[in-house]
Image (tube, rainbow, N blue to C red; front, side, top):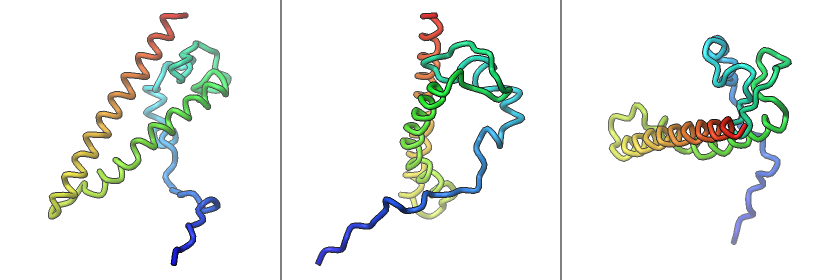
Length: 130
């Protein structure tokens, strides 16, 4: 006998009470923003613009959506490694779990470095074409 496939299409999404990073690090981001104020945060654009709000990071809605899609893709790559890293972060007994946690930490570090390098290269290339 086969069981019916689970119906997840209408399942509630995960909900965390942790506020977004820009809220948590508001003071720090004000002192050292991810990008200079008035420069679009989307590395494929990097256009200089006049922000209509002090917190505006993108020159337009299209750039915001493009950058959010990129961040979702990176998040999907990072999420399993972040979970595995946290699972074994304080592990003392299980060598396998410690090894998985270490591999996860190394993966996240590599992902961060590659993504940062790629974003900087795209922003630099875009500025050279303007």
